[in-house]
Image 1 (tube, rainbow, N blue to C red):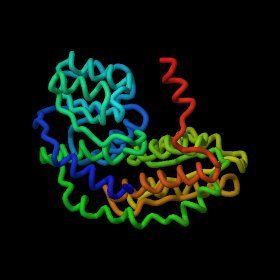
Image 2 (image 1 turned 120 degrees about the vertical axis):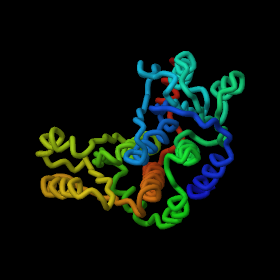
Image 3 (image 1 turned 180 degrees about the vertical axis):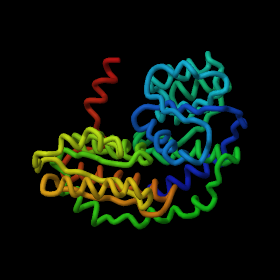
Amino acid sequence: MDFLEMCRDAIEISRRAKLPRYKFNKIIFSGMGGSGAGGEVAKDFLSGKISVPIEICKNFDLPRYADPKTLVFCVSYSGNTKETLSQFSQALKKGCKIISITSDGKLKRKCEKLKIPFIEIPKGLLPREAFPYLFFPPLIYFQKLKLINLEKELENLSVLEKVEKSEIKMLAKKLKDAIVFIYAPNHLKGIARRIKNQLNENSKLIAKLEILPELMHNEVESLYEKREDIKVIFVRDSGRGKINNYFEILKELMKDKFEIFEIYSKGKNLSGILYLIYFFDLLSIEIAKERGIDYRETRNIDFIKSRI
């Protein structure tokens, strides 16, 4: 199943899910690694669309303010993520509203035993491969609550078919031995973190993320020396004039020092977000091929999990 088919399948699974119509005044997304990416990108998308504050929690503990008026999405693809299970238990004790998203494991069994609502998603993927199944359930849920309207946007996902495979192959050859700096605007922060994580996990590259406009007040003071081993990716969309001006200033400042690649979203809003996710997912795998490594293998992460 390709990415577009997974998106459509995830939308259908989310529409079929029977979930309580909770009332809440704040939202927390609990999830680590690939399982947490859906919540981070959902926060990008929902910012400015709903008035309820949203927090991403990547820790063992929920924020102290979590209470019975807090909706907590507990997201663990495997169902066995220790941090997420810890937050699930705390959400229960605090009386939070809980919706879980998982394919199996302890989280699924706890939800079944305690009659906590959950959305069961397909097994057999790496968590980072399952992005559509982790991203769409909250959005479709909020649509059911009439907090957002996605109908027109869900009809425009065919933009994913416009991803240029030749551009990806060219870029992979340029980045295969690089240290990658990712610069993105604040409203694309979740997407940019997903990009960084995919380059780390799939490509085994050192990659770091900085956000505009904040980086204009600190990071820029490190950009004096010419470095051929560092490649810079600008993650961009067509909006936000002030931020676009910052990117142009950065290009002027960094010329002759760093090689810069500008990647623009295609489409607007939801389709633009998904285009960037898909483009960089494919790129991270193509870089792994260029480096002759197995993108699915995560020896260091597996070692850490064996020790905790």
